[in-house]
Image 1 (tube, rainbow, N blue to C red):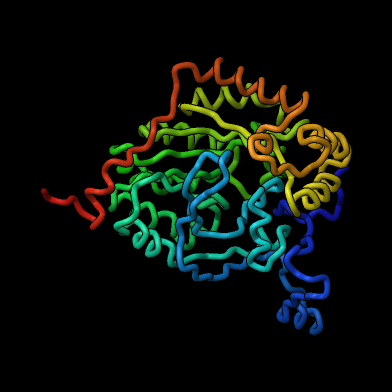
Image 2 (cartoon, rainbow, N blue to C red):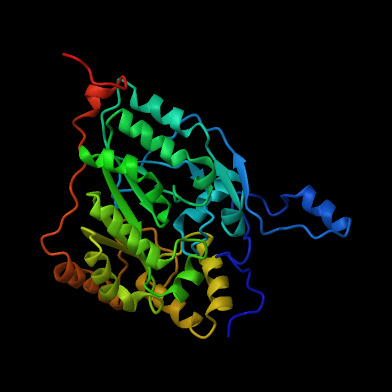
Length: 357
């Protein structure tokens, strides 16, 4: 049975200690404390949007097994609430918890489009695909209000610069007009994350994401308009979605996806504690089994940081997952391939328009 104390609409069920703070450090929310003293009930589950002002927006990715060289994030934190999300740990750098704070306190970089334009105009910059987002979803609910992702797509189109998108939200279809224009010059690739074909699984793993049906429709609509789509079957979690690898691959291939990618779940840093708390409340009947199987994939621990192994895992269970992915590719993606993005046009458009020779 599920725990009756579950916080509905959220992934994490608690805030965890921020490793960058001393145990004696205390963060106080004076407004909430005032409400409690006055006998009022404050809505602690409400999402807050907080403006931040970074000096740059494009990040060089140094990890050799991520598959991207540059990324940018218009938002930090993510209301989608995916319980397994590796990006949760990054919220600690901002002074917040990787748990509920990650889902409730969203940092908004309103200067992102201007910062991106400044970066693309640099004489020293040589075009290379920049991925939105490498850390949190650029089409999370905040995007409906702030439209920063759309503004950044307009910048990429203006400067004929390649970009890629990672998302699990059907909101991307709002920007179909820009995506089609980018696709004409092979300047866009989209990665849609699909972790299950079961709505019951989706609701507990990723509580504020688009439905599975809507995501599959998104893959089809993008593909029908000539926009190349890779589907991220990620992460694969033993005994939660590992049995769905072949059915998921079949469905997304039929929807028009050109390729699939995957990772084996790993629970680094605070995520191990958050995930363990979540699964014992949400799936108590199989919690120990799932946790032990994840440990089996990572040398006996939930945490895995070794490059080359952290994404694919090791051991018998990881081998079974990786073998199923290979089978899925050979069975459903034969003669399909994601095109390489075009980096040749940007130099001619560094001033925002075609240079005349």
